[in-house]
Image 1: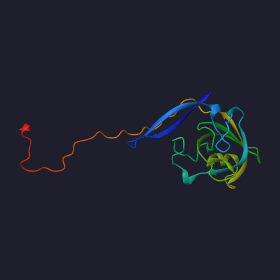
Image 2: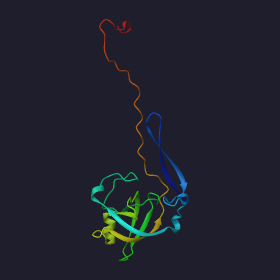
Image 3: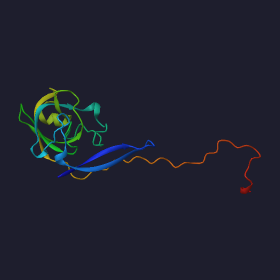
Image 4: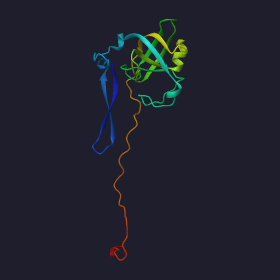
Length: 172
């Protein structure tokens, strides 16, 4: 199975170009250890937090606007688009979310969930919960449309000033 990885390059003229390459899922890397992730047997246990209102509507790493009412999450290394089952270890409640963002950026946390996912897991009031994460579906092999950079405008002739008596006779 393969998943797309989008890379960004800066051209000499200052235009950002987007290119997509497809790499095997086995090549997904754990950002901390540098080891390959095996999504088929991926399992992680640790602290989850949630984020909501302050980020609602902001663009996520996947390019979609964050929706605190959707079942989504941020993870440091799982490929964007991966569906994971998150289980609250303390109460046994589970929810399936789609990884659409990067994070969490607080040490000791393994996943940031949307407000809705945290509510469904029963820890909105506490803010943190011990969870177990397993992959239920790898990302689809199709790439969502990536916004393309606008090409630089073509050079245009611009007349800055006209000097009387300096007209071109060929236009008369």
